[in-house]
Image (cartoon, rainbow, N blue to C red):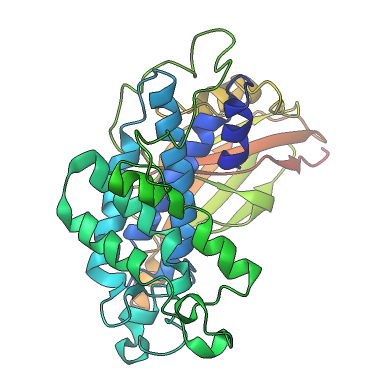
Length: 377
């Protein structure tokens, strides 16, 4: 998605207003990657491959370099997040004997004896990650990243020779279009950043991202506005289709003609709940013109609570969960009951509502819009 939008900008189109939002999402994905912990029950089914993360870093680096080429202030979060991923790879995912990264993270932590097996023997994927090391080295001069990147780049053709009966090009999988594209998609940028020259040896190196002919029609945000707040944002979770985020249990609702009571089990202490409600259906975000209040805005001011206030004219009192004593009696200490009651409702009326929970750190989670119908008198 980000690659496509940057490509249109490089071709001369104005910057798409969703680019900053897309960058926020991808940076969050990197954050969840290097914070991977198999002791965390919420990450037991987290499936991530370092080489797929490399594709994300390529898109973020292109975004960073495009801002540089256009004279904008680049997003300072990008090199910081990429460094953390590279450090995580070096510390936990790098297999020195195979000159590659684990095919997916659980190869190394779960069973180190498997790292020499074919599941991890995927050096033809190396050039989807080695350019990130070269880029970060070009920005910092830290040879730790240069050494790692060089090792990955120099062993890209180490895959088992029986996958290439011709024996050409070091026995790599180069007969396959898939492997060919993996090797050459990003590797020319590695050469530019590593040597300061173009792949044919000429210099100076041609920038991998050229400035757009018309980067911003109005010359204002989000095209040239600098990122002024580099602090870590609080997390915001939403629930597509009415499912439950990992910190929630099901919501139980009890509705009369004039009242509605909601009971939510939350698996975390010190979480508050507020219900926003009204009789009108909420507005929708215009994807072609994503303006507030119905569209989320770029970091750091997402505007979610402004959207709730604009679409739901009423809100309940805010309550804090109390420990579920039945769960305590069974030795389960992380279940908290949070109850909200709203009154003064009209009989036989359809209401739209959304509960919003907020923990002690300010992290929020909310269901999508839902409805309930009050009973007749």
